[in-house]
Amino acid sequence: MVVTNKPASKEIKTFSLNWLYVPVILLMCIFIIYPFINGLRISFTNWDGYSQELHFVGLDNYMRMLSDPNTLLIVKNTLIYGIGSTIFQNGIGLLYALLLNKSMSFRAITRTIVYLPVIISPLIMGYIWYFIFQYNGGALNDLIVFFGGEQTNLLGNSSLNVWLITFVNTYQFLGIAMIIYLAGLQGISKDYYEAATLDGATGFQQFKKITLPLLIPSITINIVLNLINGLKLFDVIVAMTNGGPGYASQSLSTMMYQLYFARQDAGYAASLGNLMFLIIILISMTALLYLRRKEVEA
Image 1 (tube, helix red, strand yellow):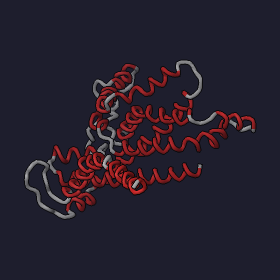
Image 2 (cartoon, rainbow, N blue to C red):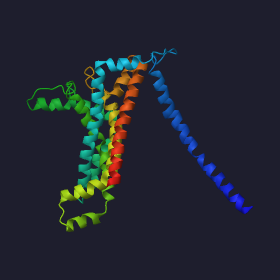
Image 3 (tube, helix red, strand yellow):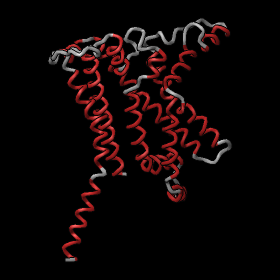
């Protein structure tokens, strides 16, 4: 009897542990899977976002998206926000981490200053920089005029404002990249560097052969997070340019917002949302799989 009861108790224990997954699965279904399926359904309709009636229009919204000349510009801006912010945040964040990983005066204060913008709301951060860059009464233009120069409309410059927004997003969140890289650097044993120094390796060789390979897990986390956050950038754009002038600084997120709330075109907004989802999945998963292979090789 004792022998037959043991497997039964194990089966009961295993079955009871499986119930722990139920709340997580329910939350995912309610807040992720159902909204995604519903958004996919809406993209095939002409729903205005408010009325109780909606009519199936097939692929009309997607054909409209492909034929719209502004779609390419909006996708290009979205890629600049995502990929550009990722490159700058990781490059500058790694430099800060390498510098602040060394023994130096005011190291803790410097880390705090670099990380401080992260705790500010992105919308507030956008408005802070808007008051710096704006044409009339902007702090930067006031300085330029004070030193004898002429005012310049930076936010109205369609070839420049996208990069200004990318700069602000980079400035605000590079502190997160710095912290993750610092954690990775502090996890690398000093024995590797001591052995490399004895073998006559230069600082650059140590960085290339020791630091970078062992930092790949941190690089993976940073790049994937930065890509996802940058590709769905919204708050800073709304605060600084609201997507203007025209479509010059629109992203897929801001365009969806305007289509849904300002133009009452929820069906077309949903189709753009599905395009953004596809872009984020393709780019982030490609980066993740590539960097995971590098982790194994290292």
